[in-house]
Amino acid sequence: MRNLRFIVTYDGTKYSGFQTQPEGNTIQDKIEEAIAKLTGEQVKIAGSGRTDAGVHARGQVINFITESRIPLNRWCVALNSWLPKDIATLSVEEVPLEFQSWKWAKRKTYCYTIRTGRLQDVFHYRYQMHHPTRLDVEAMKTALAHFIGEHDFTSFCSVRSTKPSHVRTLYEAWIEVDGILADSSQVSYNVMNEQDYTGQVIRIYVTANGFLYNMVRIIAGTLIRVGEDKFSSHDIPVILAAKDREMAGPTAEPHGLMLWRVEY
Amino acid sequence: MRNLRFIVTYDGTKYSGFQTQPEGNTIQDKIEEAIAKLTGEQVKIAGSGRTDAGVHARGQVINFITESRIPLNRWCVALNSWLPKDIATLSVEEVPLEFQSWKWAKRKTYCYTIRTGRLQDVFHYRYQMHHPTRLDVEAMKTALAHFIGEHDFTSFCSVRSTKPSHVRTLYEAWIEVDGILADSSQVSYNVMNEQDYTGQVIRIYVTANGFLYNMVRIIAGTLIRVGEDKFSSHDIPVILAAKDREMAGPTAEPHGLMLWRVEY
Image 1 (cartoon, rainbow over the protein chains, first blue to last red):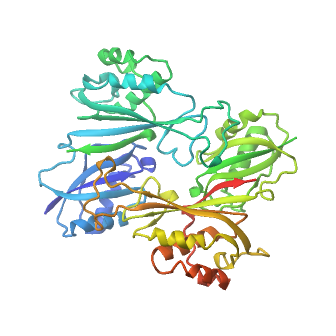
Image 2: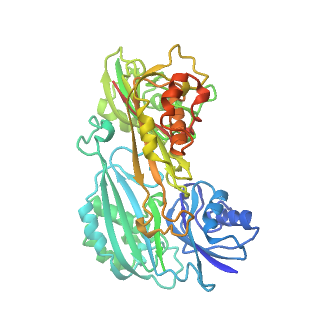
């Protein structure tokens, strides 16, 4: 009997989220079905946390107990051969029997991706929220810094949350920006309205000891309001102190969100 | 009356190719439907060439004659709002009435992308042929150089071709390689079989005055045979001279292929 921990990556576009639902079509279902096909075992996997419908994962962590004697170095390729193309295991290791991927997670990092510019990117639209106008990234960076530390995140949490405490510690948060080159491969954008502006890909990363329901998406939605100059970065401490979901910005669309990394 | 030329990009995954088919569901259909919704006109668009089912385009070129008075700088955003998310116009310009995107094309560039390594990439599998084992890229580069120049490409053309001549001139051809970093974002691959090999993304670019049916996919399939050490790079001139489709490698899968650029 072994407890195996996997790093799993998935494109959440087609699925109803990570966790098993009565209607089916979840990441968890697909992984459990693959394990059943591979080993004949009906296991229940545990994830480091749920991801909502349409949310992606670069480094989700799951674990389960198995009686299978498949050697460790065969598991990933074998499981992947039973998984759909938009779900894959990246690595596996044996962990103590008492390990639970949800309870033992110390730090989680999410990434929220926004693409600005008039034009959509047909090859990345599944993973990027499209925002047609320019955003003030420097103001967004200043605003983001206000989230770092221990806070009551009630303002940045769905009102449907049932958690007893909304206090979480945000360890790190940063923004990375890639310019979109107008002249790459000589594709000409020079007849668009905003002649000098081809857009940017803005990635917001946040690392915390845990996240509340919709927390990253509400932080992203609020930062977008800052980038649009509808909120000031100075509003963030006020919104946090208010503990009122109505004060923060909208919940950004799920498809821009990716579970980046889970640390133990 | 104006003749408008657009650069168009699309993810071909869901479509039955560029050109209108009796069964529908083509890129051409979707663009013509969007034009009809925008202008009320039933136009026939012309593309620089067909792309097969599942093949993508970064820089396809189309043109059509329109009576619409929509200003030039509004066309792309307006058309994109009627197009599905996996098809977008990037730029537009007015061209002489006699311009035809197919007849006037001087040079076309295609890109064929291969991902090596045991693991699939769930975010790019629609655009990359997956090859689980290592390929000898240096041998592939040597082989590719043999294609440059004017040749009869009968060996690298579907037997279903109806073209009167299979002579084409390949102006340029090159290979770009990106390593896949095992340690990016601390995702650990260290328990996989080939411990030091996380894979590569190999992009084969070819520029010619024109391409025959399946030509790039057969060149790619043949280069993969070279990379697997099943063919030698010295076999390429022999295969070209044979003018026999049976001599070349297999036709590589469509989803790795992208129409990169058309020059006039």
